[in-house]
Amino acid sequence: MILHVGLGSFRPVEVEDLTKHKMDSEYYEIPESTVEVVNKTIDGKGNVFVAGTSACRALESSVTTDGHLKANRGWTDKFIFPPYDFKIADRLITNFHMPESTLLMLVSAFAGRDFIMRAYKRAIKEGYRFYSYGDATLIL
Image (cartoon, rainbow, N blue to C red; front, side):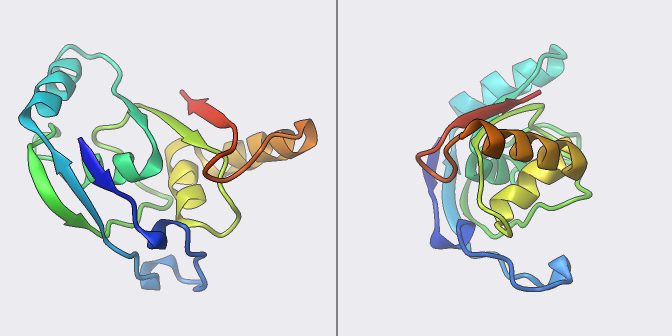
C-alpha cells in the first residue's frame, strides 16, 4: 500500500458541527496483493489489523457494497468521527494523538470516546509521548 499523508491529518478541527469540517485529501494506492490478503482474512472471519489512521481512512474509502476491500488508487478526504461503522478495520495500531485532531476523532469512532479519553488520561499520567513520534497503542 502506498500512502501520502497530508497536512490536513494534523490540522485541528475548529468547527462544532463535525459534518462541516473539510478534511484535506491524501493520496493512496491499494494493490491487488493487499486486497487478496485482507479479503481472505475477512472471509475467514479473522481480524484485519490496520497500522495508522491514514491507512485506515484509505481502506475505509475502498470498500465494496458487500463489505470487502477493492484495489484502488486516488485521493480520499474521508473524515471518520463518531458514530462510524468500520467496514474493513477490526484492530487499529496508532499513536496517541493531539486534542481536537481528526486522528483523535477517528480513534474515538473506533473504540468509543469514553474509552479513548480514559486511555489518554492514563497515558498522560504515565508520561507517554504523543504525536507522530510518540508511543503507540493497539486498540482491540
